Length: 112
Image: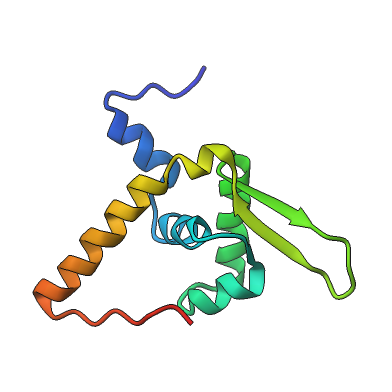
């Protein structure tokens, strides 16, 4: 039996919540990225955690993985059509975070 939710926000947080899921989605909102690019943009995430979160997002239908079958391996990640529907939400989170950083004097480094 599917999980029952009592509020749409509960469902949304269940799908995109956690420490790294929204950050991964925010980077992929900007376009297709290789695994190494994502790692560079998120220096605080371990390789194991990044792989695990990417697999979860893929299983949830928000991220698509494309293995181009080359040597060395070339794997790209992008938002699916469903994942792209999160763009306004992710942009709102980005804008709020940027404003909060400015209001509180919290430093936020630009992605590498």
